Length: 256
Image (cartoon, rainbow, N blue to C red):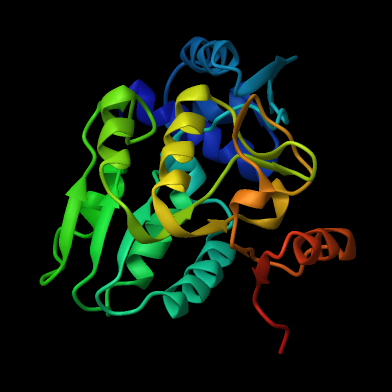
């Protein structure tokens, strides 16, 4: 097993159990305790974990970006429900943007029974996911690949995005605040999403409930930029009132 694979497995374990023990990880992955300590040192330097006596605990800081493959496995049920709602909003023949979020990967999967879609994306994962779909026009933005995110970013990416105007833009975010609006942990993701928002007729934010009332480093847009918010649970009355006042439609799974 490669060291990167082992660290990702340790990180997944941290996500579910909140803490890990060096001796247990050593036995589980059949490596020395010193090797495990080096893995935990690496995770701590990346801001993903905090070392403690005999092990480590998860870093709860919302501004920390987890690796793509870890985030993709979080809240799978919620992302599938949101993707189903999004699929109802897409018509055959639509031109759409999909961002490089893990949520957008689930959206891409949910759209596969549609016909004649044009999908523009800066996500390598979505390009791979849709590689077996026929009859669609799939366009990559290109740009600089962001290590660990499977995302194309940078000025070239934004230039390509601004050269199109689509029916619907579907994107997610790191945090959503009533005052600051749509936020990202890194400026490059924020500016890419700004370009998408400016290049679509209908702007749909697809974001799970854990992102509400959170803030992050870079402002990607304001609430007034949105037409629809799709989320995995009914928002609080405060948020529902805010959406109503801003003339934003809010969609979420209905309770049976």
